[in-house]
Image 1 (cartoon, rainbow, N blue to C red):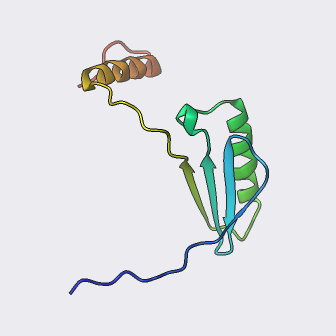
Image 2 (cartoon, one colour; image 1 turned 180 degrees about the vertical axis):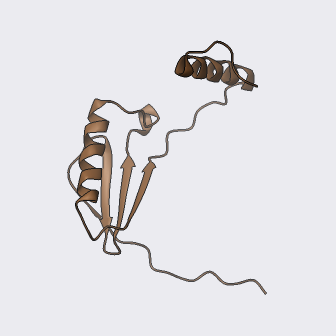
Length: 106
């Protein structure tokens, strides 16, 4: 017989701070949730994002009641599938640039 899932109450989140690129919430259970909130840009970082993340993570570090951090991104809008050969070519170029090598390991 399959186990029945427990009906645990949902976590109540309290928003913290006023940010433009992230969402920062705390729960009474000692959980912090930091969400990059730029789905229209596929949650890409910009200097403002980094500044806000630094502030939120500093607040987490300084709060002895927080024992867990959920770090996530807002869901981006759907996009058309890219052909896998094109994706692999782009990934190879990115990896080559990252490691300053030529070619892409198989």
